[in-house]
Image (cartoon, rainbow, N blue to C red; front, side, top):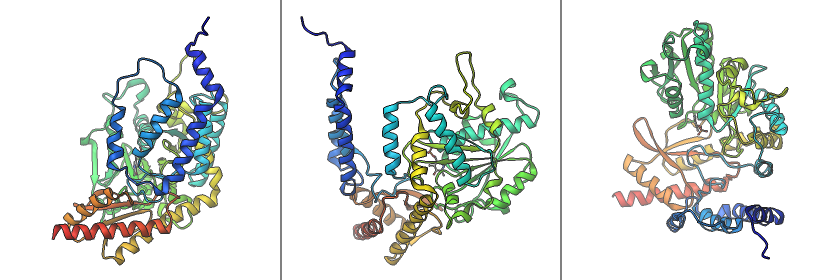
Length: 469
Ligand SMILES: *Cc1c(COP(=O)(O)O)cnc(C)c1O
C-alpha cells in the first residue's frame, strides 16, 4: 500500500524539517552580506530574467524549497539595494538589524493584531510603543497611536478624526447622519503638501473646491504671512519635512493661530517628525505639540522595516469614534485592541519590529541615527558644491536638491546616475526646473559611500556635458 501524500502530509513534513526556513534564512543572510557590492539598481539582464515569472499557475503543488530557490535566483538580483549605503531614492529608509530579526520572529508567530484576544503580545507592544513615541516626540500626554501601513493611511485616519470632530462641533454627527448634506468644511494647506494628503482628502469627501492652497516659500515652507483667516470649520495641514527639500513649516505661529480659531491641525511628518527625537534637529519641530494629529513612518528615518506608518492623535476618543466597528463576535479586551485605531481589522503585528527598533536603539541611538543622516546629507552637499554642482535647498535635514549647469544637463546626468549601479537617486521638479533629489535615510550609509556617490555624480555630469556639447 502506498502511503497517501495528502496536503497535510506534505506540508507538515516540510514544516518538521525546517528546511525551507533554513534555506530562506541562508538566502537572506547571503543577500545582506553581498548588499554593499550589489548594483544599487538591478542590471538589465536581471530585469530581463524576470520574464521567467510569466508562467501559468502550476497545476500541481511544488515543494517550498523549489519556490524559494526561484525567488532567490531570479528575485534577489531584481531588487534595488535599498538597505545598502548608496540608495538615495525617494525617502526609503534602511533596515535596522534588530528590527529585521524581530520581524522574522514575528513572521513565525504570524499573529493577527486586530484584537488583544487574538494576540496579547502584539497588543502589549503596541501599547508600549504608543507610550514611547508620545514621549520621544514630546506630544501631549495621553495622545493615541495607531499602527498602519504607512503615512498615506496614517494621514487618512487622522483627517477622518479631524473631519468628524469639526463636524460634531458644528452640530453634525457623521456616524449618525453620514457625510452628505453636512456643513461645508475647508482645508488650508500649502502647494508643497504631499500628494498623499490630496489623496486622503479626496477619500474623505473633500474636493478641490474646498481647498485653500497657499504658495510655499522658496524652501517649500508654509509662509505664515499667507495664512487666511481660520475658523472652526477648517482643517489646517502642515508639513514636517518637505518631500523634496526636507524643509519644515514654521509650526509655532501657525498652530497658535489654528488653536485660537478652533481649527484642526494635522502635521504630515512622514520622515521629518523624527527630527524631534534628535537634539541637533529638534528645534525644526518647535510648536508641533500644539497640533491635533500627526503622521509619521517608522520605515523611513527610524529604519524600521516596511510597512509601518504611525498615526498619532491628541484626542483618543476622536480617533476611536471615527474608526469604530463592533459586532457580537468581536471580543474587546481590557488592554489594547489595535483595530480601534486603524482602518483595518486583520493586520500583521507591526508593533513587534517597531518595538525592537526603538528598544535596540534607545533614545541615544535614535538621536545618533538622525544626526548621522543629517551629517551625511551635508557632506554630500559639500562634496558636490566643491565640484561645481548647484545645491538648491538649505540642507537642514536629510534631503539635498542638486542641479547641473542646465536643465538638459541635469536630466542627462540623472539618467547616467540611475544606470550606473553605483548609487541611485530620483529626480523631481524644483521651482519649475528638473533636479536630482538625494535622500540620505539609511543607517548603513558611510562617509565613504557619500564620497563614492559624489564621484559618480561628477562622472555622470562630465559625460552629460560631453554628450550635450
Ligand atoms: C513618504 C511620504 C508620505 C507617504 O508615506 P507612505 O508611507 O509612503 O504612505 C507622505 N508625506 C511625506 C512628506 C512623505 O515623505
